[in-house]
Image (cartoon, rainbow, N blue to C red):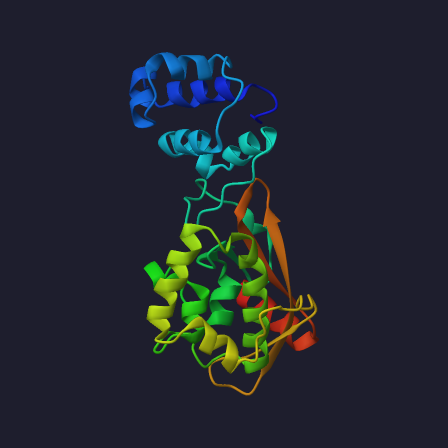
Length: 261
């Protein structure tokens, strides 16, 4: 049920009761008194803070997973909530929509899920990565990572351009500062040196959506040619699906073979 069909307070009460919690139990989790939470649920509080909404959503968990927290924030004029590696809804359906290679990535560029075609394209078994190794930048640039050295430099340059554009709105957020430090340690180099190596300026141009992805499969000479496209996930600004359209007959046949295997 959408937030505009019921008040935010009623939705909070619904989620609380669904978990079998008393008002006092939830109030203690978010540092409110039972009386204060009762007023929130009764829509008697006219000015809810962004911080309180996020705290309540974290305690209830479900509004984070299904993205309803963002509907609450939008309705009150706040910016959306972004946090890498938030849980996904059960049986998340998005990748089933794409019969070509596709993967789900979050705001921190962690690969959250990928379909069979993408597993063959990346040469990574599904769900084979854990922790920081699940980050696409780590996989593309870190020593010893499974994708390091497998993608052409021009494509890597496009990826870094896109990364800078997508991270710009969150440059002051603590989660991004911490993530960049962790990735830098894993890479064994600074972000400045990484960008310099691929001639990335501080003012990135928007990469073309018609870029080509050339990947050699299993050491063979065949090159697959795709155009990439990103699709935003509604109510989840932390998530997007990147999928690849074949650009020639050979690539179409390869996708069909993977689908039938």
